[in-house]
Structure formats: structure tokens, C-alpha cells
Length: 335
Length: 188
Image (cartoon, helix red, strand yellow):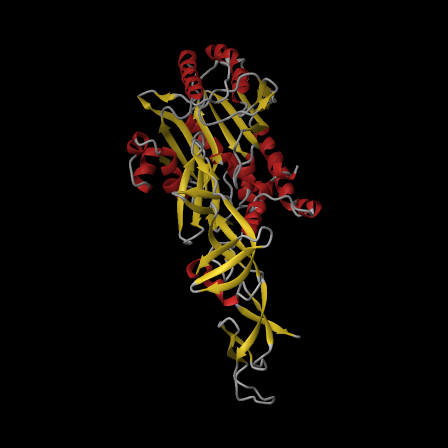
């Protein structure tokens, strides 16, 4: 965005700021023209989703649909559910999908809309499309392997066999992809260690400012072994309770997926939920109820791993788009 | 007015350390499961200096009280410039520093917008075009191809500007105040 500085004044007339303000996510008068221009991207998006279904069906997964409107979202500190009457729209289908796993459905996947309040930016929409899949008897390492396989298969379907460009970055999906632990990523890229950043309450800032820009450049990377306490539904490492068996996939600096070995200890899960609810209450956030039926199902939940992948983000990579607005037919501002 | 971080946008004007700033760049970032961060670039509306800062969703901000007033330039008194509000005939004086480069285009009764921060004038913006009379120019004879295609002339405000060589003293020219450049000659 060009900063239009008139020759004669050091202070800009207010109308320039009105224009800047309006340009952000503006609704175009020629709506039909801008919609029509998206056709290639929307076609690529539709193809991608079809290929995702084929991949999972081929591997014996059952596609499931779980309710978008639920009474108790999984309590999280940094994710706000949008209210729907006196219930809520799901921020993720995790709770219901785990109940299915507990009932014996061992390999399930779902492509559904997720809703998160106050999340809007070039890479965020308050309503977005998530692919989630769960595998009984898997741990997070096996899930990383499977995620790799999915994305390579999708790339092949879309005709990406060699290197390609995205946002001035070269992407090469050839194996092996990089895997680096969070602690090592801090040592490699950050001015402080992981422990120091947690102690100074600057983990997120350091991750975003110093580490993320380097992740997944040239090759995709799995950032794994996050510190405990950041993801309330992830299982801790057996021999190291300071670490969560959790990973995130980054491609060209863009966060694509978040997965973990699932916590199946009902008592620990309840404790974590209680703590999250207390933190939410202390910050005056909306009150959620405890997901009791989910907690009950944990007694029957087998060891398993699950992952959530942002389909819009993946489409951005394959369609060469830098803004999430460009990979969906409508953003909230155009409604 | 106090606003939360979630209402920040590019173009919003904030009061920080008693000075007005405008957000020139704004990015919402949220690392997975982490907190929302609002990365901004802020520009001081008086000095023009910029800095970058990341904010969190709990942070709050004060919007800057900025208003524009349509005023007319009346005259210069010593080193102060007098402007009058056409509606209530209120007069204010701006210093040379506050007027800045606009002095090059101030002619009697020209309509300007004065930018006020908390009732203090901090800047002035002119109409996009202004017509000024050329007061000093080297003479030009038709057919004189030895001279270049442009020449510097002085206009009634004392401002020196490059114009095509056929422009003569006494003529009126239109200038784009945004670039300071010659546009065309004006008849009458």
C-alpha cells in the first residue's frame, strides 16, 4: 500500500486515512467480476477437496460429520467460540470425533467449517475449513509420516512434481521433510532459549518474530515437541512431562497443520479443562460448561493421534495465493 | 475513545505518548494455540518518524482526537500565517514550521484544511491544484532552439518551479500541490 504523502504537508489529510481504512477487505462494487476471476482458484480448491476424500477412502478411513453447533466447546485460553443461541459453533470437531473413536471407529476424517471469534487477517478467517483426521494406535510420529504422504499425494494430483514458487519462496516437497524440536528451533533462530521465552511470557512473540519466518523454507518442516501446557488435549511425553507430543507443519513460513498424540487420561483431561475454565473466568471471557460426555468417553478412548489441517491454507500454497480471501468464494466482508 | 486491540486497522489514528500516530501497516498473526498478536507499523503524524510494535489482544489504545477544519488563508503577519474559519470567523495563527512547504502555494483567500490534534494545528493540506502567476522568467523567443525544453521560473509566492520554455512572465500557471510540478498554463 503506497503511502501518499502530499508534497506540501507533513501531516496527511484525514481523507487519505479513510481510504487506507476502507481498502482493507473492501467489498468491490463489481462483485460479480471479482467472483468470476476466482474461478481457477475455486476449481483447484474443489479438486483438492475431492483428492483429500479419495486419499482417505483409499486408506480405509470413514468420512464423518459431527454437529457444528455444540453446548460445550473444549475450553482453551486463546480460542474463542462464536455463540449460537445459548450454545456455540464449534472451533474444531475434536470432541465429537474422539467420542466416535471411543466407540470403535478407528480411522475417521472430517472436512468441516470451524468458527473462531476475532480471528481476521491475511491468513485468518473467522469461519474457515478444517480437515481433521484421527487414527487409533498411532502416535504423533506416525501421524507426521501420514501427513507428509497426504500432502505429497495431493501435490502429485495437482501436477506439482518439482519445485514451485509461492509468495517469492521456493517450495520443494521432495522427501525428506525437515523435523526440528521447538527447543532446537529456539536455539537455532531465537535470541533466547525456549525456557527463557516461557519464563518471560514471550513464547508466542518469539515464535512469530524469529522462528516462523524460517520454517518450511525450501522444504516443509515439522516443528515438534512443544512445551507442555500449550495444548490442553495433547498427551505429555512419558519420560518427560515438560513436553507435549505435539507438532505443527509449516510450509514456506505458513502454518498448515497441528497434530498430537491424544490425551486419553480422563482425570488429567478434566484437570486441564478446569484450569482453562479458571483462566478464562479470570480474564472475563465467555463461560463454557465442562464437556462431561466427552470426558466420560475418554475411558474407552484407545491410544490414538489426531491432526487438524487448514484446507484454505493448503489451497493458498497450491493456488499461489498470499491472502486467504483469494481462496474462498466469500469473506464475511462481502456478505 | 479507548479501543481494544481487535479493532486496530490500517489507517486508524492513535494517541501514543501524547502524540498522534497512524497505523501504516497492520498484520493479524496467531501462532497455533497461541495468543493473537497484532503487528503494526506506526507513523508519527507530526514528525513522520516510524516504528514497529506487536500488541496483544488485552492491550487497549486511545484514538487520537484529530479533526480537519476548512479555513481560508488571510495574510502573513511577521513570521505567522493567519487563517480564518469561514463559518465562525475564528482566526488562528500557524508558525512557519507548522505551515511547512505549503508556504509555496499560499495565495490570498486560498481554501485549505487545517489538521488539528486536540485543537492544536499540526498540519495543513491544500487543494490538489493551485494557480499562480509567474513573476520572474527569462524571456523566450519563438524558434529559440538553443535553450532546453524547461527553465526555472519564480511565481508570486516566491516558489521556484521548472516550466516549459514557452511560459512567460505574467502568465498564470496551474501547479499540482501534491508533486510541486507544473501542469499547464491557465488563460485569463
